[in-house]
Length: 286
Image 1 (cartoon, rainbow, N blue to C red):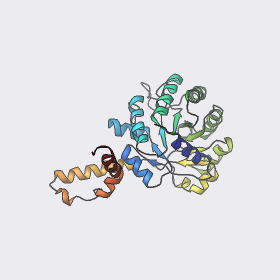
Image 2: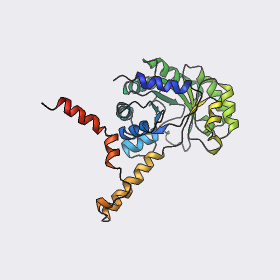
Image 3: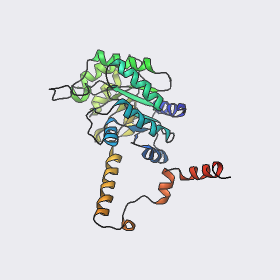
Image 4: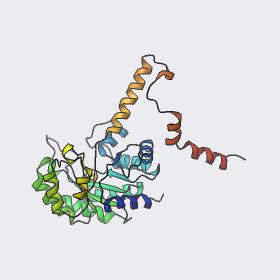
């Protein structure tokens, strides 16, 4: 498949003067819903992948192949540009290169490589970061491994969350020199912190889930923030809806009396029923 269109659209988001909230997606149906609602970008998070694929917490027990396979299923479902959380690249800098190859082939529009020590080492009770030098090397390796120049490589740092804004700025400057297309920060909670980062680097900025102090998208855009996450509530909402429906059925509620079940019209839309009906007419009837 050709994913040039999605990658070009993602780069348009980075070049624009607005900040967008991505739609948190986890499978083909959720991606089609996000696209139909007008989301400019989809986000497939590592934490959501662990839940959707393994039913496991976000402890980096998922493998690259499992993650890439689900990313491909999402990408092929429509034309929603997909940003994915590639965690630490599943190993050292050479593993990062393999990660980029697999996710580029899967069709993602953008991927992040972060500076967290993953998985958590034996005996370690807190989240730690790899050195700035190693993280920068991983990001250079990611850029080198990219074959499609349209693919966006994003350097991601959790320094603001775990060691402070001063270290985050040092890392931001170092990562900006590696050839990445944008920088992603988690743990930025105040305007002062964001302004310090924006003053230090000129690359487009992405933010992890923002709080009320950073909820003004016009302000974020003025500080070069192009994407700001809102969290991953859609998957949790799907879990709650499935639980409530199965519980009601188990307790004897008749299927016809269930509430909040998607109507046939919506199911037809998200499953592309009309397309399949047309293809059946064109190709399966004599």
